[in-house]
Image (cartoon, each protein chain N blue to C red):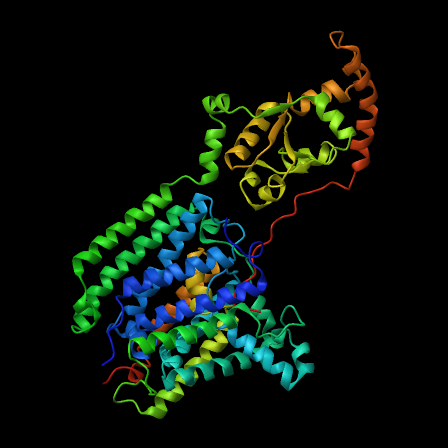
Length: 396
Length: 170
């Protein structure tokens, strides 16, 4: 599952990735015509809308790709870098850049492309960019207040508006396709010899419809998590794939034996886990089973993962989910934590007359030791470490 | 004769796929203006180490490594290589100043320098430029990135009329 940073590829290798990505980026930008300032600024005078076409096509391609990979469960979208929002500096900085764009004829990325193919004006732009950044840097201590003003964290548009990401993506695609159609009309009128003249019109129209259909398809696709969870809750599937069950007595015995191959996974909410849990149990709520922290816990080899919930039924859902994700050796506590409390920890646990003598004696000895172990853990609870977001961006 | 440019929609899909691969592998987006800061940070260490440590703008992590050993610096080096390759293949390598016929070379240079400087300031303030904030922000639906994108294009259209002599003949 992506991203491969920071767990799969190292920082050093990541720099090689950066170099290769850069080569691809520079190649594509130059092929698109972004090394030419007159082509870039044609956008603002109606003569050449190449920038708008390339930029928005790239934006919606990547956006739909991120959404699709996330829903397929191939990309953990909760840890990818999201450009942070500082309202004031985002808007003022953007407005200054807009003036720089139309005056200078480039943006930083395209100026590097222009300089690479010998455009002296692009080289001047690069020099200007360094001077501007230097001016900003020298003024930085004085304007830090403005820089940090109105911080909103790193919200996404769906998070800020409450709309589902799929709907937001459809909105962007609609706006983009409409804009493509509109600028085609403008360009033909202002500049009859512009790029529009050579376009295969019908193929472009078909592509516009196709991308809208694709966006709707991606939006309608239920996320992997939801699909797996639906199956884990399906009675017939559960009946056909029952997880292994461990009795309360066996679990108590293995706990007292300090069995190192045992991993206890408490799937209840954090508050319930904080109030009571078994020794060595880690907290991994249902939504984290499919993510990276789930892999940290459930991917441990040569261990038996026992899911704990108050009722066995809830643990079966989590265990079935884990088994579907390919994790091996998963089991549930028979009767859930309710049964464990009643059979092992409660004082009346040994009064059941149907018990054989060995079990009765074991429970009699186990109850005080386990109660002491549970109490002794106190503040030293093992918790699942939250997976950090990837570092990125251009700012300070 | 230099070759024609690629169809813009095809270019866009390819650019989008480059960005998607970057997000999938490295968990982050593309960028360009961040390399300005890395370069200045490296220069500051040489020119005046005291000032470099006093001003958080020139700080970088980890402190013992060179600021040039950063993801964006390597990416920008790649951009220059990639664009050069593309220009070579399509026969577009020329040492020239691109300008409309009515604009003098010196004017075009001054405008490019001034525009670059404005972009340098704006990109640092907004924590990213058209690549890092606008395009990469759009891919992950970042609120700040999308707002910056709207500000860039809104302001550029607002100003375009007043500087039209730089690009279109009277």
